[in-house]
Amino acid sequence: MTAIEANAGRGTVRRLAGALHRRPRLRLTLLLTAPLLWLAVLYLGSLAVLFVSAFWTTNSFTSQVVKVWSTDNFHELLTTPVYRQVVLRSIGVALAVTVLCAVIAFPLAFYTARVARPKWRPLLVVAILTPLWASYLVKVYAWRLILSEGGLADWVLKPFGTAGPGYGLPATVLTLTYLWLPYMILPIHTALEQLPANLLEASADLGAKSWRTFRSVVLPMVLPSVAAGSIFTFSLSLGDYITVQIVGGKTQLIGNVVYSNIELNLPMAAALGTVPVVVIVIYLLAMRRTGALSSL
View 1 (cartoon, rainbow, N blue to C red):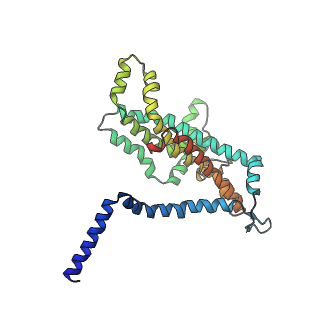
View 2: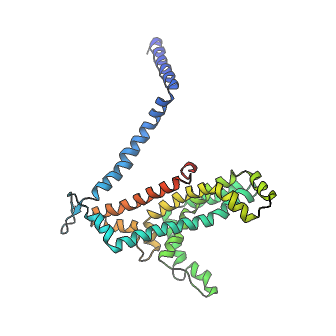
View 3: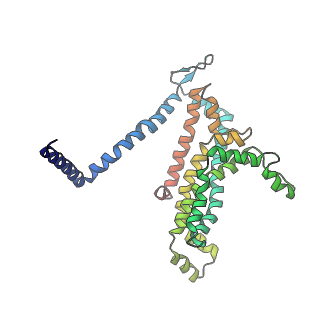
């Protein structure tokens, strides 16, 4: 390559860089095109295929998918009591996990953000994140051992004349709470850390007690972060199917019902799979009114 060709190439690059610098919208469009195409084709496309296949049927003899349009799957989903119970139970578990995470996370986040010495706060945040570094299955099987008959839970509660919850719905809620708790602690910790100290001092100077300060000052400012954390805990709990298989006993949630129908009745599994999507969209729309999406 001659010096003239090299200079011409550098000049073209400079002109292109200058054009992009003068057109920020074009620059943003080029940067977002690839990830948006990835999202539209792979993620939204797969959801569209899932929704379309929910309108197909299955041959009762061969279990093969028959591409004949029908709303029978959704009709069965809405009219069969078992499916309604599974959906309501799954939503109830997701809400219970979210509430427990919020109740446990708030005092922990308040301590790490406002009470602990500044030099210890990064270490405490790392300690909160440490469980996320372990394998999902390792953590769930560890809880299976803890909750098993004669396990750690029975050993701890035996002096009080009671026993552990064993396997079932309480064990599922407890395990999911442990798994997703860090996702609730971190946004609350960030919000409390950014809370101006002069607001708390002004509330105390005006004679407000601790509970009144919490209710009137702290909670309104931290609530969007609580809602942001709840998006993670709710959606992750609603779609989980491994935990309930390991510690849930005979409990059935949407995830493992979908899993059990994939090979036998794929269209029904697709119809069941649309339920969490619809529920999460409704939940996101509700959380949007609290300002939670801007806190993510």
